[in-house]
Amino acid sequence: MTETSATMDAPQTATAKPHLPDAQTVTQVTHWTDNLFSFRVTRPRSLRFRSGEFVMIGLLGDNGKPLLRAYSIASPAWDEELEFYSIKVPDGPLTSRLQHIQPGDEIILRPKPVGTLVHDALLPGKRIWFLATGTGLAPFASLMREPETYEKYEQVIMMHTCRTVAELEYGRRLVESLKDDPLIGELVGDKLLYYPTTTREDFHHTGRVTDNLTSGKVFADLGLPAMNPAEDRAMVCGSLAFNIDVKKILEDFGLKEGANSDPQQFVVEKAFVGDGI
Ligand code: FAD
Ligand code: A2P
Image (cartoon, rainbow, N blue to C red; front, top):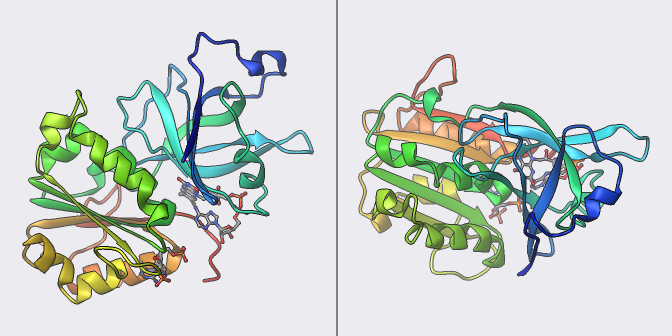
């Protein structure tokens, strides 16, 4: 892991550059693997969002027009900065450049948060399941730091699956830091059950989220009853194939999909588009 950061008092390289529309300044960048990094930026004073929502961010393209992509805000609504957790797509129009940002640089951030992974889209329940693969963890990095999550539910289960152990590290560190967090550590207590797994490398727990749900292994490992519509709520964020497979499993458990306008028992959002389906 390599980390670069700047305090906001330090001279900003960005001041020498022309200002971007809706510009925000990068304050910290951490590279987790060759294809994953996280970064923090200043937050527009007027930006209000619900933990779990996403915004459009980007850079100026070569043609002088904004090159924007959807990004989940990984920080909670109370944080004075904004955090993002990103893939590095080698030939990706945005991330082939975004991966080189440094503290002091500017990015574009359109301050119009939207999304379905919000508490308002679910009916009250006893447990909430956060189900993610890869960068699909990002909205849950926000929701795991959101007090409302622990006020609304007795137990919070974070299932995150990646190919390798290194790809789990951002989430692992975040979960570990929650215990000692002065703002929400006490609220989190022992409510958060973290269940990371790998599929292409040895680890203490392995296997796809889908397989660990259908086999009942995750329920046995965590000492929980099988999912049921009276007690369990879920939020899902991964590739389209993952989302489709998980949706079917949740429906087989009797849960019904909801939305902001129609709160039900689970909600789904794509972590990215374009995986061939
Ligand atoms: P693109 O041209 O956008 O993508 C090229 C290809 O790379 C895609 O066809 C796909 O196969 C693959 N790809 C793109 N994004 C990912 C990814 N995240 N994981 C695995 N493969 C990917 N991306 C993030 O890294 N973090 C986020 O928090 C995030 N939130 C999103 C929220 C929503 C609602 C949506 C729709 C997408 C989100 N994305 C997120 C994806 C993001 O919008 C971009 O696709 C990504 O930043 C790559 O941009 P690009 O221009 O480099 O490549
Ligand atoms: P697997 O290694 O068995 O394909 P990717 O890196 O391809 O985006 O995948 C991220 C993680 O999500 C991997 O651990 C992968 O498992 C898992 N995964 C991919 N597709 C699905 C799916 N349809 N259902 C469940 N897990 C999936």
